Amino acid sequence: MTGFSRSSFRSLVLLAGTLALFVAFAGIATAATRDESGYGPNVALSFSRLDTLQLPALGSISGITWMGPDTLVVLNDIPDTLSESGNREVRMVFQDTAGVVLRMEDFTGVLDRGLAWDGEFLFSCGDADDGSSILYRIEPDTLMVEEAFDAPGNHPCGMCFDGRFVWITDRDTGRVDRFDNEVGQITRSVVTPGFSPFGVAFDGKYMWISDSGSGRMYRLTGARRRWSATVDTESFMMRGKDVLLLHNGDSFWYLPEGENFAVQIR
Image 1: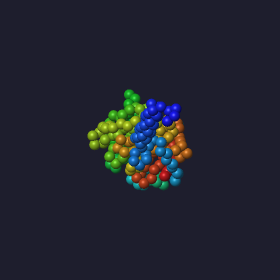
Image 2: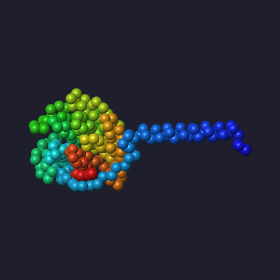
Image 3: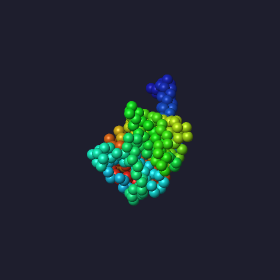
Image 4: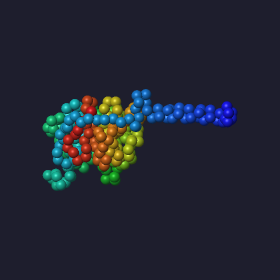
């Protein structure tokens, strides 16, 4: 080799080997953020809108859940400027899919946000006088509070049931907490994507989180609720808005803040 020493050649070989190792480790690092199905935070999902569902028109909706395939339960928050009494009122409203009200109960001074149905009980949250939050377990026939628990964080918002546990988002702490009704305790907390989680829904396989701060919707996978995909901005972008999510085992819906129509998506 004219003009090329053995030491230079050896250096090039070592450099090539180092680059090969770097590429290999980079591949491993990339694979670590994605599972065998190709899931990962950078995976973008698209949604299409299918239908809308009418909800109570007076005031705002602060909690929503399906109670069976044909009955929707809504926590209806009516400000003093709109209520007949001149005071703020919070009602739990049972309606069918056509918007016909089947039942209504006054929960003023007790409930404030969130609603979930676990097949036996309804769950919702209220604010205590000291600024903390309380999780209520409600018997569905009598609508009496059966038991109350200290809620984690300071601002629980959305709720859903995954077939075993009730999950509760907390906007102030940026996490979703798992409540085990059998022991009456929070048994796991997961930091969510974004920084201000609000709505949460479980579709039978995945958990979905809407985030008020980022305006995005995220998919969480597995028992550890690992961030596995993000809905693209063309399908969902609502920065600064609180968006409730719900799933009835067959269809997926979201409800933007200030709206009285839930939007069905696929």
